[in-house]
Image (cartoon, rainbow, N blue to C red; front, side, top):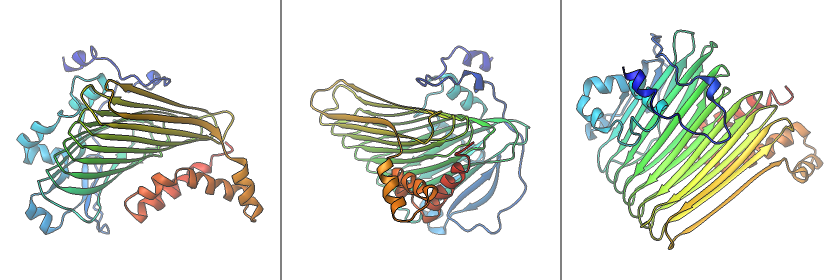
Length: 392
């Protein structure tokens, strides 16, 4: 009955992206487990493979302060009322079909709860690994609550273990309370045989700030929605996106910031690189609601074409219902700057190395914002891996 009810809900719309053949509405949760333990791991955070927690580490002072970090399944068992009161607050179950299916089927993910007035200095890290063994799909739910005046930097990685064809559904809800600060960095790395739906959204209250740093280095077809609702007066959100597509891959993005609070700020900054016969579409939306006086909505999307066979689009949209605001957008799709290449090659660099440096510089602002040196190196390694297929 639930499945039939969900079929009446609309599918999410990603302009200029035909994702119907991926059949993302038809998923079955994987039952695969991983019994290994990462005895060598030593970091503040959590690692989940499939639906199994293989690493969990919180310092004693954070536990004493009331910080919770755990597998979402464990959170439902240990704190059922707390989790049930928070899930669905940002992304309503009935908002669209894929979100509803995730709500009904998820069997992995994590829950992070930070009470009021807690300052976490080390970067908190979470890894979610998909097991692609042909036994089902990866359906993950992530719930992050940051209490009043609390602060944290969160680094999340997603990867694929195995080579079987599969699908992934990931829904992330962030609730940022008054005066809180959250930097949420993502490195998405699903494998070439995984088609993925990713939906990340945040509600940001007065004087709170949420900065997204989203690196999409998946190898399979992917649609991603990244949205901030800057609801409170003086609330702020920056959404920085880097995407790299290659071979015959298709990636579609909706990056949206909605200004509801007075004097709120929402800035979108996107960089995409295209190789081979792949396609990459950026749909940026800046929305200022009536009454959000003094708000600022800006967006900039750039796509770098490294192939004449690829398809790239940057589609900006501003929806402004208030007069006393600042808003603007910029978008471009173009090839590598030949003058930059010539300059680097004239200094003795081979063309291949020069192209790598140009690409690194192109996404440099996102790369530099990654919260750890290891994460920055991971992106550099991902660029190297993607460029292996440049001539394919």
